[in-house]
Length: 408
Ligand code: ASP
Ligand code: MG
Image 1: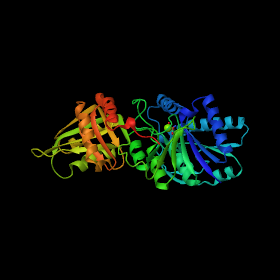
Image 2: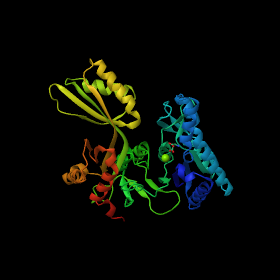
Image 3: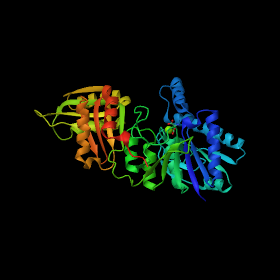
Image 4: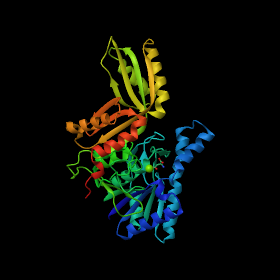
């Protein structure tokens, strides 16, 4: 049996006519000879609306109660899509995450898939059914409903593709692939026909949005052929692969994340244990920290700066003050909210001195000041002022000739 796993995002099932279009497309794929397993997200904005409704009732609902609520978004879309397919006269079954055999750990709102028991899905495919699965959810071994974190339907799709040994996993969405930059910000952005798992992982972590980070991790781990494509057109698409044949291209994409705050803890004593104390305090508050810089000490004191997601900034600042108090009240905490992270991504870029100098040179020529720099094997990120973010994005896209990228 040739199994194809497809995932349709919230905008692809946003209303009745789109749902019917998706239904026809799924049926067509089945008629072309595929056994179809289709993962569906909640209809456009449904998850946000459910979160808002919860907050109106109780500003601080328990994670378990939230999961009971959030899982209904995907149940609604999967049921409606099943009805659309029934209406086309095809055999179809809709399943929740739990019914599909998706078992997770107990961490409500950010559960990890622990195991997939594909028996039910395989049995349904064996009966000739199109199998629709509610994305973003699973059950614990105790039968509690969990959700996988925002964007979790991508993860559901890849995990199912691994479990049923699908020939590939197609993420069908409102864009026709992965672009060299956000096409909403850069009109000349080009679609990449191909990208490596590692590059895609970096782009997802940097907020590219088109695939959830966890789904790319899973696809890489299990070697799942992953395709990002339009939900409504057969053209285009981006293949996510292990090794790319498009070797001459160093920089694949430029990303901008404007939801960042920079926090500095200035004037802390220069002695062992300070960084440990500070970052374990932040970790114990559940705050994830991105870039970290400690400067060279002057007069026995250090400044440590780091970045966090803007929404975590108030809690982070509070934790920093608490830490300073615990070491005797030395130092102060400075917060800058209008920070942005601009990054370039591509295999082998840190091995090329030319890439780094083009990056820094372009920002310099644009009069843009760099506040922090961090590098990994396949990316270079700079923290700059948020007001200059889009300008930096445009200039870098141009400087690396991404708008002229050869497409095959
Ligand atoms: N509906 C969930 C969300 O909006 C999951 C998803 O769309 O993948 O995050
Ligand atoms: Mg999504």
